[in-house]
Image (cartoon, rainbow, N blue to C red):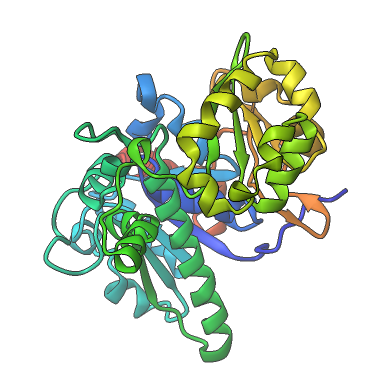
Length: 391
């Protein structure tokens, strides 16, 4: 089956680093857009991060082309401007004002390309904080997500770059909305998404809880759950999560495990009453689960409609049977020539996953091809290389 490419024909020029900006380009590229990543001479430093940053580049730079340009060199800057002149979309996530100082701001570039959609991925949207330096972790701390994740008094960031990636997703939403508007007006526009405001959107449910109940939300480890059975339980070997989130599922759960005494108690037939009786119910459920091995319990729960989940680690996902059978992972050839599998875009279109093998581009791998497309002949390309304008 042919991979869906709904954004085929859209040209994207990307001036980005780290995660948020590259995530925007990665999503657009997976949807079929032609994405050209403008890297500095020698390559984006994100390529060489260690520790927790070592996976950033391969995860968020698949399906892209790479051109290496010295933006501080007049000839290199001219190359960048020519790339943008023929583009539909520009994506950048540098500090406020950096692109303007290079002559690559929206006002300057839109004069020659009024159809340009200029997407800025920032720490903050315009306001008192807009010139602060932000990171995923900064936003999680400022926005209340870290407070809600950790135990009381121990703020804890989420275990993934959730704000970088979600902020990038909001950036894609804004870009696609601008593309649709351009169909009607013929003109592009500047759009922005940000880390801080993304965090606020994610914790909005806790703000709404305060508005509804008049009581501030407790951190998740100390919260009063909306459901009585909604927790991690220990089996004889490995833990498992089980959630019983409706009255119909409570009936199913009781009958599945022959909990006749609990089902006979009509005072806890309704969810809110079960929550109130949680201290009485939970010891019985924990004792029940402890009688099983994890795989035995999964086999019993499978197909019942009851929510459950084994507690997995990221490395377990390489061999996950569902992901491997459903196209949830795509083959990627890494910079050193080794092959791995990484998550495909988690959507399906017309019955097909957006999943295609790819090779991570070396720095400047497409420089000559792209310069030729801009009208430079081989002598001109050689001069640009010799002068250090491109790499």
